[in-house]
Image 1 (cartoon, rainbow, N blue to C red):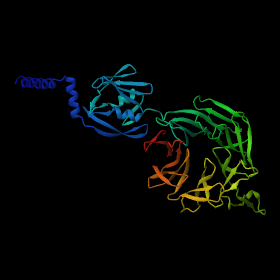
Image 2 (spheres, helix red, strand yellow; image 1 turned 90 degrees about the vertical axis):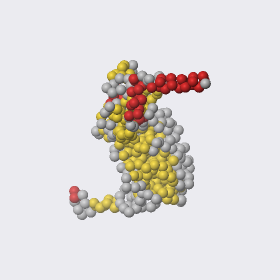
Image 3 (cartoon, helix red, strand yellow; image 1 turned 120 degrees about the horizontal axis):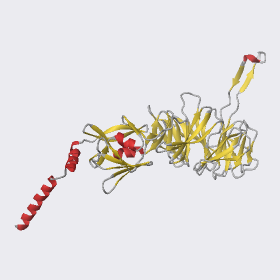
Image 4 (cartoon, helix red, strand yellow; image 1 turned 180 degrees about the vertical axis):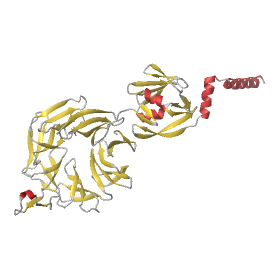
Length: 466
């Protein structure tokens, strides 16, 4: 009997204790019951994001966790329940129901205290974003100043891209963070070739109008001249080991030449007196080459007419590009013509071992579609690999091939091609406004869409330029 009585007294005491909470905790419990979580669409650095929100006392508060994830910050909750958010050089510390937050050790007043609902912290978004150095207005969060546009891009690694834009009479090349869009100027130039990335991803190379070749160390941003040779250099291509740069030499791109990085010396690889080579591709061992040859149209004029009348006839028959293959290890070897058909051929890619080439064949017939074709290095075996949908672009990412193709009314499709078996699989879709697909060696995806560069993050496209 005494034990039952003691248990009853303990239960009554516990019930009384639970009802006698402090005013602060009573208020928090009341808020938890009253506030209803909903969602709202935010734009974070021009990218749509869904953020959980609550309304407390007529004020809309947003989830700290959702906003932290959206801007790429880090979130940690200390043992004393202090919420800590770190973004760049800013550290924000916050406690539930407090009227201040701490920014880099300095207390800052909050017009509306943060609250906790369903174990998540909610705060007035303007105060949160501005405390971390960003701006907030009408559900628009800006934490970095994005590059205004993007005309061309290449991956440096999974975290960075080089973005190039026309600037006046020249070009500007920027290093852009693939997560935040933060950028820095790498090179401002005029009359220079496109930057090409070294195989180790640590430097880029380019040539100027005088034929001189330079490299830029991407960690130090320091430029170095590696050759003073003044011949015209087109379509620079790194060797796989990074020791050399191959290029098409001369104003008519007649010669395949090689530049040694160590001493800047230039040597000829192929000089066959054939002009207008283009789209140079080099095998992994640096001994095999694929390229287009363009024939110039036949131009005739009526000798009986005054030359000032500019009355000429142009015959473009047979001027379609044809693909050639050259093996430099075979003595007295001449380039082998791999194609003869009267179609345009674009996006030429040579297999790493030089065994075959792939390209997109485009007929002049408006009803036809672009098709992926592969041909061996003898020109005897030509095989269509993909003709299901109109192929817009062929891209190489490491050892894999990818296609940007037509898909639906509002999307394009990205396919991965198994070059060994010819099979394909759908990887992802992208807006039908995508004009260029950019793939890294580790199969990171980016695309130019309406003049903006977007990267694929867990299947969704995120703009990193404006």
